[in-house]
Length: 128
Image (cartoon, rainbow, N blue to C red; front, side, top):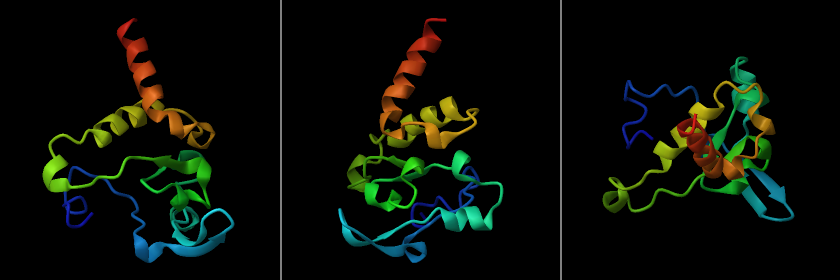
């Protein structure tokens, strides 16, 4: 994020960022031994953030193993030098976040359908 200029850009309001240094090692029958991101660290440090108002984005589903209801899988951003101008993942994600922003509990949503939810909601708005 630092190399991309996200952390120093005044347009972004980053509350917390869990990189590899914050990850913990866990054992799973399905995935074996691996590192994951524990949202409990954020919830312990920032009382305004709780299970109901937190979503974590990652391109690896296993990073959500401790908090699967709060995970939203996005496509990996690869070959930045080639795809920078055509990648629309975060633009589409913005629409999803704006759509759900006023809901009381994000953890009850099926984030695996975020793109469909966004498209359906956009179509409904156009037909009003």
